[in-house]
Length: 495
Image (cartoon, rainbow, N blue to C red; front, side, top):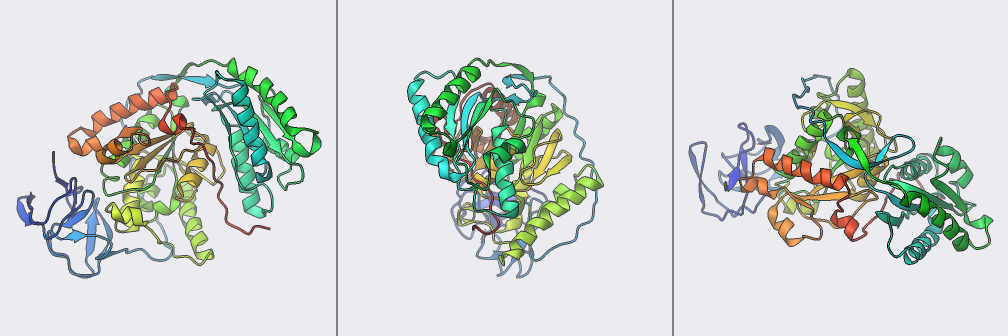
């Protein structure tokens, strides 16, 4: 096993793949380097003496500049490195060839073909409140149905609570309606009961119209203020929905029907070396099979956005990507917050020093393929291949947005670990083996083996096989624990 890695020939730092004690003698490109300090796993050390103001190069790009002299073999972290980023930028379209030569294997998985032609990888019964005032009622209905049906034929019976649907204005109100609409219409649900109160801004009848042409045999509405006993009426509707959904069966469908969200959280110094580039290989693979992937977390594109922009398939997609980036920067400015307030304390502890470094690792989840489309928050996937989605870095908000865009599952890479789950299967992929071993109830797949001599291509084949099994119905840890939540992005005032 290698103990360190210089990612790109131009890099003037290397990354410790295992903890390296001070005094260790390493040979890098024929040069002997004695470590001046302990280097924790995932952290960087200088390959050459670095002067104040000099750029720190990792992944072949500047990730910031030195704010103090850094000796060869010394630890490089947030204490001696600062970001180069500031203010808004202008961008120029410099397209690169992003066409990939990956064979279509004509693979299939067993999914649920819905009436409108979309495919789910789960068959679940959901209760979705139009407003937070009826969260308790939604929860009680779900508990009652679970108790009544002891051996359910469905993958899950769940309520998706939230705090909104009333006392919101403008974009916030529309964002709530869009996310809830997309959840109600999601193909992972075999049936849905929408429960409203009756006096909320998100009026049930208006929301019904907002759904468009929906399956009225599988989506029912209940307005609590218009019935005598909402629990009794709700149970009548749920029993009918259950019988219909329980009759659904899996059938063979092409892998081109798969739509997968790409997300990271609690990143560390190995994220950009193991799990994120592994997801990049999978994203390229799925695009070649005719499927779709979606990359989000716009603030974690800052500093690496030009890599994505230059892979846009047209000037129109490039222009939308520029708006995606600049609109999110303006959101920070409008709220009098620094644009580049990142990385988090956990990121720093894991070896990430600047936003550029975090972003260069984060965007590797997108692979190398062409950017086909850009989605605004609350929009659904229109194009096969790689898509970009406007959403913040917050784990639950971003994962919810990915599911609402139409992703049947979300792939979540992490170096620190987290137990949360969104409303679609949320697959946790560890960047390092110690996390995989210490949190078997959190982590579903280990990418840390890539620094333990497993070839990246072999890990990719292992991931493809595992995710196919998840699409076929194998439950991930969050599903086993019934960790299911949604969170909706809010930007404005609350009345």
